[in-house]
Image (cartoon, rainbow, N blue to C red):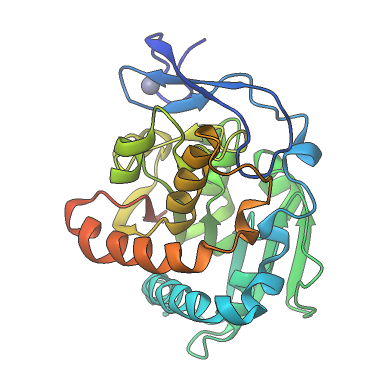
Length: 309
Ligand SMILES: [Zn+2]
């Protein structure tokens, strides 16, 4: 098997793990690393078992419920502040246009849509959300169109239109063939259109500490290809990179800690990770570390890429 992004044959088995976060199977999954580009890939990704590996309690479908819990309000307010900042940066590039068309790939809970509609400085013509499943709380709005599909199958033949702004937050690591997805996304953009990607970073402190026990960025078995801020350039084809922003990866810090405590049998109960009680305090501590300290050294657990066609 060759590397999914640089085609090198220098891949070797790197790590194996089970689902420590949602307990969707007892299987042991193996990961490979490419010695040429450092891409980490899940061997034999369970792409035909999406219903199993994304259970109904998966947080993408439960965002609103989680956000409304009293204890989570502060966390989500901080998260929303940073999300708004990055969206404003992206929208700056589309401001010369009126009535922009937006596509959110993997936005099944509708939370991004909600944030975009609350931004009064843009006029939105339509928002299409593409995902394999949608949350119950998705906003009913005549400008919102839902497309039930895998990111891999989303092409211009399906959408029948192009977009000014395509959002891909924590989706590219979930697809089988990231290169072909990015090439489809390029064709789905208007000339001058903008694409925003967010994905885990293997050049992070969290990865360095926990990659051989359990790093939250593996999200076993849901992340099929895991990048760093350098090797991701290999899947971008004709896109121009406008900006790269290092950002916090709190849920991954939390998952690393829980996964390691599970391996040591200190944590025994199988509680879905986003419902665990210590999440609040871990979020505050590691969010601060990632955002204030690690950002300086490009060692945060996630990064944004802002791309232009
Ligand atoms: Zn490679």
